[in-house]
Amino acid sequence: MQKFLLLSIFSCVFCQIQYSGYINTETKIRNLTGEVLDLPYRLSQFNFSYTFAMIDIISKGDVEFRNETMEGLFSLREFYIGFYPSFGEIRLGKQINSWGLADGNNPTDNLNPYDLNYMFLTGTDRKVGSLSVTFDTYVNNHKLGVVLIPNHEPNRFPIEDTDFKIDDNEIPPSNNEDESQWGLSLQSMLGESDIMLTYFNGYDFAPSYAGEDLPNQYEFEYRKTQVFGVSTVSFWNNLTFRTELAYFDTKTALDLDTSANYKAEYLQYVFQLEYPAPSDITFTSQLIGNKMLSVKGEVMIEDPPSIEATSDNFKMGLGTPFAAFSENALLLSSQKKYFDSQLDISVFGMIDLTQTGYMLGTNLEYSPIENWEIILGSSKFIGDGKENSQNIFNKLEYFSNTSIGVKYSF
Image 1: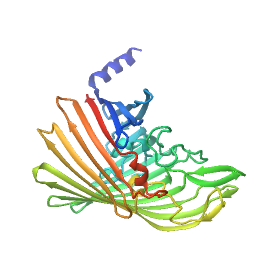
Image 2: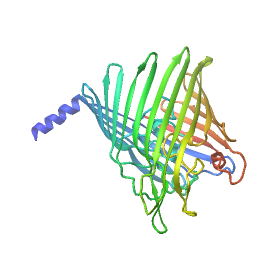
Image 3: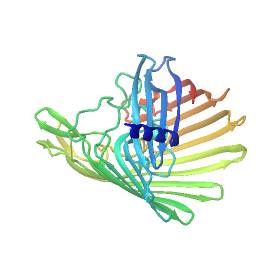
Image 4: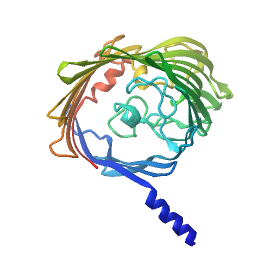
C-alpha cells in the first residue's frame, strides 16, 4: 500500500496535466421563413491530457444540445493511451485518425466514419471516433503507419425529426457492421514536396440495399471496399499546391437468398491551391470530384427485384461527402483578419460545375475580450429550381440559414 501511494505521489509530481475546451451557444434561423431551425450543435467540449514519462492519456468529450428539445447528450469522442518508445508511437483506444494532405476534404481519409449532422464543419470536427490501434515508426525521412480497427462503425446519420435532411435519416439494419478493418500509410519527402501513400481495407460507411434474406425481409449491407490513395503538397514561390487522389474498388459483401451481386470502381480527387494575397488575405480554391470507372453486376430493388448495375443506381459509400455532391465542384474561400486577429472574416462558396448548384456563405468571428467570441454566419444554397430533380442543392435550399453564437474558450 505504501509503495502504491509513493508511486502515485511520484507520478503526480513529475506528470504534466493539460486541459482545454469551450462553452458555446448557437442559434440558426431559416432564411426563407425566419423560423429557428431545430439542429444539434456542440454546446461544450472538454479536452484532457495526462503525460508521464513516455505515456500520454488523451480524452475529448463534448455535449451535444438541441434548443428545440432542450436536451443534451454527452459523448466521449476520444479516449486513448499513447506510448512513445524510441522507434515511434503507439496509440490504443477510441480515437480519430487522419490521413491526407489537403485541407478539410480528404478522399484518402477513410479510417473514421462521418457525423453527417456536422458535415459542413471541417477536419476531425465532423468525424466519429472509433476503437483502433495505431502504430507509427520513422526511418530517416520516412514515416510508416499501421492502423487496426477491430469493429466497423457506420456514418452517424442526421438525427431523426431535426431540420437537416438529405435522404432517409434513419439507418437501416445490417448484418455486417462488426467487421475488422486495417490500413497502411507511408509518408516521405520527394524533393521539395511531401507525398503520402495509403491503403485501406474495410467496409463502406454508408449502407447499400443487399436484397432479401427471406421473402419481404429486406437486408442492407456495408460493401467490402479497398482504397488506394496518394496525397501531395508542394510549394512554388508563395503558392501552395495540394492534391489527393483515391481509387476505390468495392463489391457486395452479403450472400442472401435473393442477393445483389455487383462490383464497382471509382475515383475521388481534390486539387487545392492556396495563395497569400496582399493585406494578409488568404485565398484558397479546391476542385473536388469523382469519376466512375466501371460498374458490373446486378443491384437489388423492391420492384423489379434486380436490375443491371449502372452509374445511375450506384451510390458511393466511402470518401469525402462533398465528392458525392457532384462529379465536379469548385470550392472558393478567402479569409482576412483585422485588429491583431480580434476580427476574422471569411467568405466561401461552392459551384457545381456539372449541374446548376451553388452554395454561398460568410462567417464573422469577433473577440471583444480574451477567450470570448461572437460568431455570425450565413449560408445560402441555390439549386436548379426543377421539381423531382435529384440535384442535392435543391434539397438544401430550404436549409439556407443565418446563425449567431457566443463562445467561451478556456
